Image 1 (cartoon, one colour):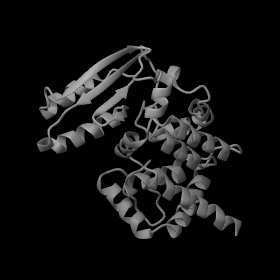
Image 2: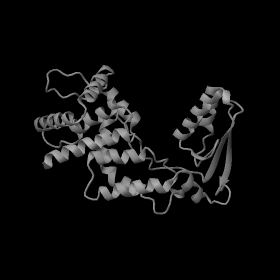
Image 3: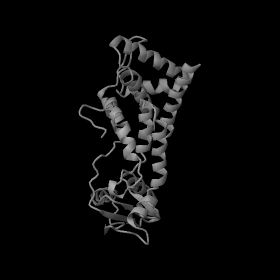
Image 4: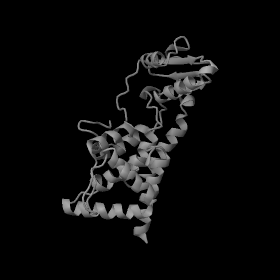
Length: 275
């Protein structure tokens, strides 16, 4: 019974990783699972490692929607993310292309956050006839770490001018977007920079997620706990340390999970880094 419970926890964590957005596609989750069972969790000799990996994966496949995983493996092989195997018990290995694919979806922790102390505002006025461009701009400025202050007004502590200029030129949006330097120790309205950043980026809720993760990993970190950490990190704008709340838990969580990043780094192309 206890063994079944452990298997169920692995499966539920895998599903959680997919639904929480660490992996947006079953292919990416499958690549991670293959690496987890095949490379990261087995510290014994080659034969024992191979046998234990195959057994664990077989159990996993019995508990998850088989067709989803099977199709994901087929797709991964077709794109060259997994090596083709011979024989039913042969264990597929992640190729360099597969490692590159994982590297593109795994968020990185930025341990060195250079900041000049300034805030920047992005404002735009894009006509309705170009609504698609307006939507793409919103998604883009979210992706580069900007926080929404109000409709068509975003804020960021990092100078976005070069990135925005490239986007404007590519989309032909000259004259519709303005980037303003608020200055050092800048504020908007009656809020100081700390209160403003905390509200815009919803740092309290994010900090609560880190605190929950820390509570749940008091007894140790396994590789699925690493995935759960990455699911939080993916939503973390990784703001300059100087403007984070004094009780910020993100850096504490990273210190705890950092030793396991050495293992996760095996998923990256040669020379790749997670932090």
